[in-house]
Length: 400
Image (cartoon, rainbow, N blue to C red):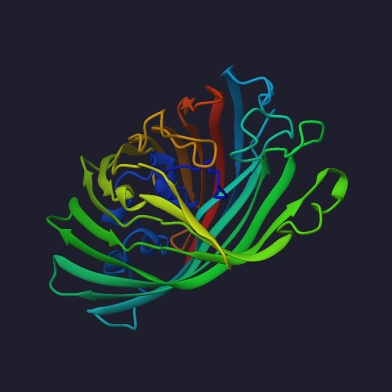
């Protein structure tokens, strides 16, 4: 079985962190619109609130702390816990918005990462037959278009041109007990199109709502499957050494509803609830030129909840805080080290400083508790003793 192992920051496989101001409140209310070009990354309809031309850019890092605690195992697997398996990764996004000097139409374009992961276990860890190393990337370049139907209602669409790359490694059981395990790897990439639909309704000057639908993304990773013996020697002649292979991974469709409400001139509250159709990930297919199969996942749908608040100290400083919760998609009996996803809780704090009427800077810190991710396989089991992700981001927004 060759699929990806993922340490991510949302229910299932999607990323929630995009580096913008809403990250300081765990993304709560983002789909109900922001005050800069980053708004289109969450809801394409929200650009109807913006005026002129605006630019947004962010950068940051995701720093994981991931270590497995082996609680039972077989003699052939040993007791290795895999060491510190997390790999730090850079984060970044950018967006541009233009209003056409129109009261109805507006458009934009943005670039961001939709999903990503990096795991690297020690060679002797007990779960090496499920995964030893994984690198996953899903990023998209996205034009958007919005139309203001009335003073209160706006509609929008985003067309996502995405690129995904997968590189994963694991061990395969030794044929001869006097020898070491064989090393197996698969790598591949894919491109394609998906879309996001959005609507926004401004009930009053203080209260607005947003509703978005994200379509499914299903990359087919066409690449090579390779078996290599220890020490870099190829497996014996007559064995399958390197063949064309194809695997598939589903990023589920989802729906989110959000609210933003200004309590007064200083305080605002934000709420997001969502549903993600992870039961679509019923299995992960893998095939070569002469054989095929699929790995059952038995995932179920997940639900996303986020709440956050904003406090405006004065005309220049604003502070945010929030928490988000994503439900668990899989039972411990069906979870494995290839997809060790559990319930996730995000704690967020952020700030923004307004330099002028056209320029502001900000940043946030998130800590994401990724859960215990218990594994109860036939030959080994345990839980992730450390399983967290620290996300740091800084951003700048410019209107002109």
